[in-house]
Image (tube, rainbow, N blue to C red; front, side, top):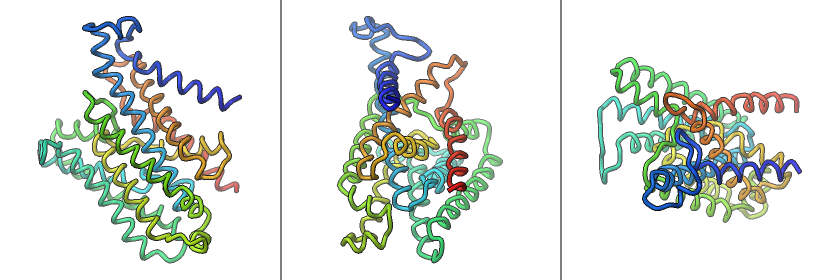
Length: 321
C-alpha cells in the first residue's frame, strides 16, 4: 500500500510539475495556440521537467552503480569528489573569463566536464596503490580530493571579482534552469544510453555487488566490466554536472529508498531506480519553483536539505550493523 501511494504521488507530481511556478498555468490555456501559457509550458516548463527527470535518472543510476561496484552504501560520484572536480574546472573557466569555445560550447561546461573526468581518472589511478580496505580507502581518497578542490576553489574566490564569484557560487549550488530543448534532448539520450549499458551488464553487476571472487568464478571479466561501467557512468555525470552544476545526494538517497520499497537483487532494481530518481528530482525541482521567493532557489539546496539527514541515517545504520 505504501509503495503504491509513493509511486502514485510521484507520478502525479511529474504530471503537475509543468503547471507550477512563479506563474501557475491553466490547463485550458496551455493547449490553446498563441497564448502566453502555451509558450511558457512548451518552451520553458516541459523541457525543464524532461531535463530534471533525465538528470535524476542519471544521478540515481550512477549512485546504484557505484554502491554496487564498490560495495559501499556511501559511494556516489558526489562523495568521491567528482562533482567537486567539476566545480573547480568551472571556476577556472570563470576566472580566466572564457566565453564559448569549440562548436559554441560554453567554457564553463567544457572545463566542468574535464574536471569531473579528471577526478574519475585520478581516483582509478590512485586505487591501484590501495592494498587493504580498498573500498573504504577509496572513499577517503574521494573526500581528500574534495578538500583539495575546495581549497583551490577558495583561492579562485579570493582572486575573483564580484561578478566572477557570483557566477561560480550559482554554479556550485546546482540549477535546472534551462531554455529550449537542446539540453533536455542531450541529457535524455545520455540517460537512455547509461540505462541500456547498465541493463546489459545487469547480471555481472549483481555478481560484482557480492564479491569480485564470486564474479570471476562465474566467468566475469571483472576488470573489463568495471572499467566499462565506470567510464560510461563518469561520462554521463561529467556532462550533467558541466551543464547543471553539482546536484548532491540524489545518487545516495534514491538507491536506498528503492531498496527499501523493493527488496530485490540489484539487477531487478535498475529500471525502478532510474524511474524513482527521475520522479524524485522533478519533485525537488517543483518545490524550488513553488516556493514564493524573489529568485528561484537552487536545486542543490533542496536536495542537500533532504539528503543531509538521510546521509546521517545511513552512517548510523551502518555503525549499528
